[in-house]
Structure formats: structure tokens, C-alpha cells
Amino acid sequence: MKQYTKILADYLSDLKYEDIPAEVLERAKLVTLHTIGAALSSMRSKSAQDIIRIAKTLGGGGVEATIIGDGTKVGVANAVLATGTMADLLDWEDCAWTGHPSAGAVPASLAVAEAYHKSGKDYLTALVGCYDIYQRVAMAVQPSDERFEQGWGLHCWQIFAPTAAAGKLMGIKGDKMNQLLGTAAHMTPVAINVIHSSFSDFYHFTHGLTAQLGVECSLITEAGISTLMNSLEDDGGYYLGVSDQCDWDWYDKDLGKRHMIMELMMKNWPVNMWIQTPMDLIDKLYRKHQFDPDSIASIEVSPYIPERSEEAPADGYASLVRAQFSIPFCMAMYLKGPKVGYDWLDAKYLNDPAILELASKVHGVGETSLIPHNFDKFQKGSYPVYGMKITMQDGTVYEETMQFPKGHPQNDYTRQECIDVFKLATSDVMSEEKQNALCDFIFNIENVEDMSEVAKYITL
Image (spheres, rainbow, N blue to C red):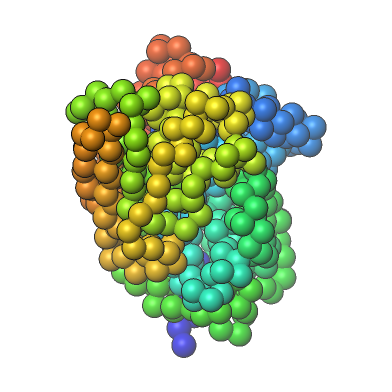
């Protein structure tokens, strides 16, 4: 059998800025802007303020980086804890087919590049490389349907993105990079289903915690450890901790030619990945017909997706995550709630009578589409087709179907569209002058000699 850990370690060690195609570098810039926007959009929420306070309590050190938005410098891993959590709070950051690597990849890359005074080219190279490592590991170890129900490891393989990014920027190479991937494998959280079945808000904090841990693994490996080689192999045992199978070919399939950052979905809405297309559909139908939300009799959305299409609870939603993962809630928020952005984090809407009444009119219909059954589609660049039927009280019907939501690689953002979403996300916390300055910095980041400059652009 091939030595897959070594193959990935050597690839990341040897990856150079000059090796990366122009369109991939452009995508890295878009992903950077999009993720920073998602983090900044959460700034006024209680959860964001809590994690910022915790990061400050954990304190600084010899190598420090900036907490996005707040501007305080703390130890580099603690900065990543705060920013990584914030990046996921609105569920607005980019999405891979296996989770949210951006919530760890971008905060870790920014913080380590700042702390170690790396160049903008170094930053882009590490960011591109860490997605290649993360997504290959994640795809290789996707579990069977039976194992999926026991616990899907979204927050398990998450650790490989920030670990790979931090290690690359710290200059870890060769056997030490092999060891670093081993630390990520051994520090992978255990997958248990309760984090998903309970829809706990702790789900968002796991992204910051695994990102922090990835940086700490890199610091330890940089200092020096013994052995711990080849942890991804069959006898290394990594996949057995998170899955019941391994598709070994994913580790090196088209490595160096197929850059995984190009296969992210740039989420157009601050909701779960599975609700992006329904959001595009309701937006399209409403803009076209300008119907009165109070005159709606029913909204039918197909296919039926378990844990996304359930009827709205009469007594409201028990957690923010449960609401973010609910098609009925998100449809109601679009039609009756505040503008898209930070206010979607306001807990008062979870039990708002007007929101709940409209949400009760939204129903999942059609064939059942199970999440694990769609990974084959994702790997082939496809996506489920959604349909929406809005029936008004007077009998008028509006219908639409769609396959690829805006931001999917098959319906990709332009640079301007990405900027527009960033400005929407940050409009409540940043002046237009600061928004434009940050955009200019990111889209010219290859010319930056010292990434410590980023601090002034990400501080409100």
C-alpha cells in the first residue's frame, strides 16, 4: 500500500506559490473575504462576545495575533479559538461537502501569517494547501450510512485544515510534516451523534476549538517530537476512529492538479448548507411576484430532508442551531424577519409568534433525501434538485425548481458578488470606507510583504 501520510506531507511541504493556478489564487482571496465577513457579522452576538472574552482570559504570549473585529492581540492559538468560533456562528462561511474547513483554515492562516510575519504569497499558498489536505482526508474517511447515524465526524476531520495551514506557515517540512499530520490524527475529537441530534449551540464552538488545537499541534511539532509517523495508514488507525471504511484513492487522486478550494460552496445565506437552494428559491419567487407573506396558505419544499424539513415546533426552537438547520424557520425569517445578517442570531426570533405562524405553513414534501446518500453526487460535482411551490389563500400558485444554489462551483460567485455578500454581512459593524480598505487589502494580498499588516484591516 502507498504511504499516504508521506504523500500528503511531501505535497504540502513542497507546494509553492508559483505552482498554483491564477484562478485558484483568486478563489483563495474570495474565500478569505467571505470567511472574514462571516466572522465579523457575528460580532454583536452573545456567543461572539463570550468567546472573545474567553480568548482574552487565556491571554497572550511571545507569539501573538489579532482577534478579528475586537482587535486585541492574544496568543496565536487563542486568537484562532475566537475567530474560528465567530466564523461559524451565523453558518455563513464557505462549505465543503464534508463540513466547514473555512472556519479553521482562514482564521489559522491569517493568525499564523500575522504572528510569524509571513508574506501574502505565503498566506495564499498555505490556504490552498490546507484545503487539499483537509478535503482528501475527509473524503477518504466518510463513513457508511450505518456509521453515519452513530456519529458523523464533521468536527473531527475539521482539525486537518488549521493544522496543515499553521504547519505550512511555520515552515514545517518533510518528516516533521508527516508527524504534524499525525498529531492532527491523534487529537481528532471523537464523533458522537448528540452534537447533531441535540442541535446544541456548542456545535459552533467546536470549530474554534479544533482550529485552536490545530495551531497548538503545529507549535508542539515545530518544537520537536519523536516518532508519530504515518498515522493515516491502515495500521496507523486514524480512519478507524472516525469511520468504518476508507476510500484510500481519495488521499492522492489528482493531487496537485485538482485543488479542493475550488470545490467549496460559497454560502449565499447565513443558514445551513442544505437550505441554500430553498433560500435562493424563496428569494427568486418573492422578487418576481412580490406576494404578501400574510396571504400565504402553504409553502411546499422538495425533496424532504430529515432534520431540515421537519414541521415548525409550536412552542418555538430550542436553540439557534436548530433554527439555522430548519427550512421552515429560514423561509419565515426571510419573509417576516429582519434583513439578512447579524439579527438572524437574535434569540427572540426563535419563539416569535409571527415567525412561528408562517413557519408552520412550510412543509417538506416529495422523496426523502438523506444527507449521507448525497456524497456521491458531491464528489462528482453534482447537487440535489430542489423544488418550491407557494400556494396563496386565493388559490394562486407560484412554482420554481433549482439545482445549483448561488455560490456552488457550478453557479459560482464573481468577485463583485462576493464583495456584495461581504458588505451585506458586515454592514452593521463596518463603515464603507473600512469595507473597501479590507477588500483592497485582500485582493492585492500577493503584494503584501508582512501579513502583520492585516491587523489594522480586521479591527473594527
